[in-house]
Image (cartoon, rainbow, N blue to C red; front, side, top):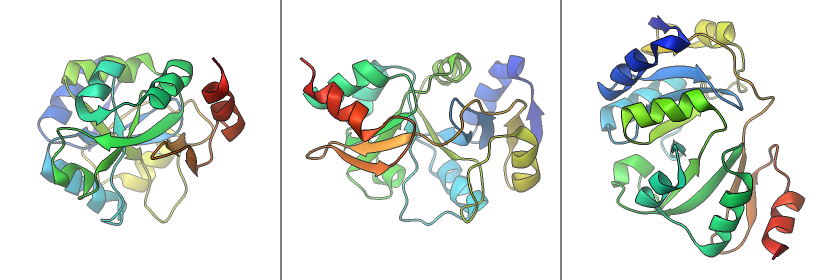
Length: 200
């Protein structure tokens, strides 16, 4: 497993583009990433984590334009995105232009724009979205510290970027299909989301 420094962002991008899976700290928890359109890399993440095949991987985009390339945004989604994104919020949306292997047959995709300039820059260098899940074994809790991820996943992944995650927990996950539903509690509350939708 290669250990990257944060200033080696170009090397991290090259590693991802060749199909490697790489862990790095995010604004929430430590993440494990691959490029979104490499089927072998996706399967490597499932194997590394011991993740169930019926649990699609969430996606990270660098901006709203990239989100609209791969999903359909309704008026309510746009309202919430304009208020809370970038940040610790994953929104489940109808997919667009995505092969079934990317979403494991689902017609939806969970997407997040992280509040982390380094990750946004990495996605732009890669030139396409990343699939990013928590960097931990599936039967264990989310990890925040580089050393814990290294000890847990050494020998299972291709690379890791030094530095800890900045958040205290995973992102809030919501669906707006057809109405607001909280799929995972997180830093952004149901009350915050409802207030956003109600505001003119």
